[in-house]
Length: 188
Image (cartoon, rainbow, N blue to C red):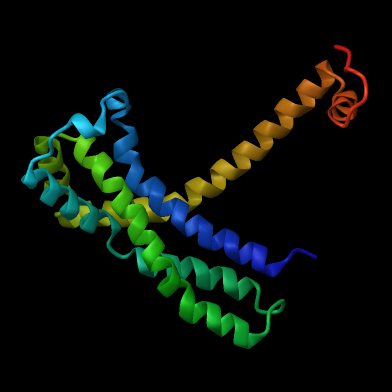
């Protein structure tokens, strides 16, 4: 039987991943600036304020989304966990996760300030400060969960296919023996 805590912790981690993916998507879109040293870039006070506003606009409501994800996961575990423990998780998960979420958001702030120009940040804030922008930000967070699940499925399928083909070309059993101190595996 699967450990119900493993499933719950996966859901909690998923919530963090969703937030990270949502916040990092615009940052990843500017990968051409990767080589630029953060320390050498002077960031204007206005860019810092714009970054704070951008993060406020794009992460608002994350507590509600996390609570919803956790509640859904806990509902599926109702038969496998005592009610008292379920109640504890419902009451404490978001409270305990919040400082970690805040640290994640803060860690992205410097990168956002470095990668985006002031004009780009003004455009982002201008967009996300509209009703449409707020709706899209909320949907991006929701989609992050689905995207994460799809990526997990993709990764498992891909890695299984890759390793099946790799072990078809090389003797994986012999490689395991070699790692344990036996003879060198032969190429098939």
